[in-house]
Image (tube, rainbow, N blue to C red):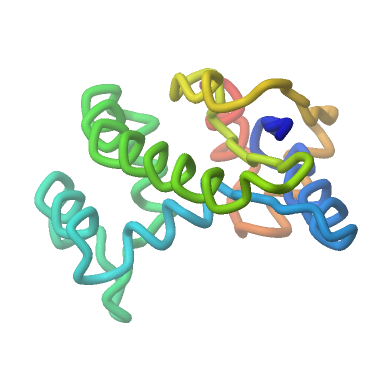
Length: 158
């Protein structure tokens, strides 16, 4: 089985590309989806992150305010590292379990936004980087996340 890592920055078009592969019947394992599953209210990760950041990062619906978390971790390298220490090993383990489940496929796509930063490159045989002009990335992210241009530029600079 050929494991293809798909990566790229915020707003680069990763979701569009993974949807194309998925629509063609190709297995896609998405690190962001796994992270969302791992951080559901009541989960071990949820409780650890709540202890790390505090109650003020939980919305009225009982879920994390992901936008507020992003702002905080980009401003605090130590909190970013602590959050990654909680999530990355679990995400990697879950991805490896899913790869094993689909080992009879000719190839699969592993969508991992932080492929290099999280040291997940050892999970894949080939890497495809999705890239787009910063102005396009800013526009896409604004449409998707309702973030200001300054917030997005700050994310792009990290």
